[in-house]
Image 1 (cartoon, rainbow, N blue to C red):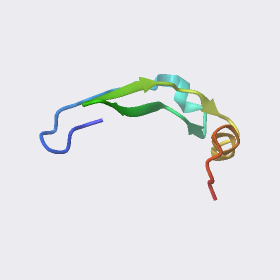
Image 2 (image 1 turned 90 degrees about the vertical axis):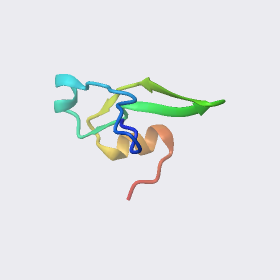
Image 3 (image 1 turned 45 degrees about the vertical axis):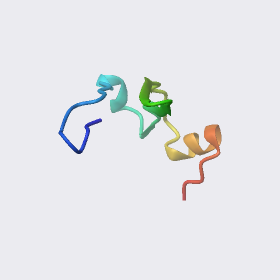
Image 4 (image 1 turned 135 degrees about the vertical axis):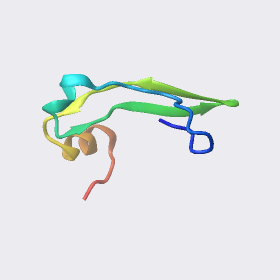
Amino acid sequence: MVNQADGQELARYDLGEDASTEPAMFSGELQRHCDEWKFRAVGPGYVSGLRGIDLDFGVNVS
């Protein structure tokens, strides 16, 4: 994640080799708390693709 204003890197999450076999992945959560941004690496992969994310999180993917 990079700040568009100055090009400064804000967060990095290296998925590595684990990401090479999954067609869909939930890689992290970004949230604003008070005046700060927080990023939490998550990283579960879904062999079922976007349908797996849809089933877990109720996201409508068509």
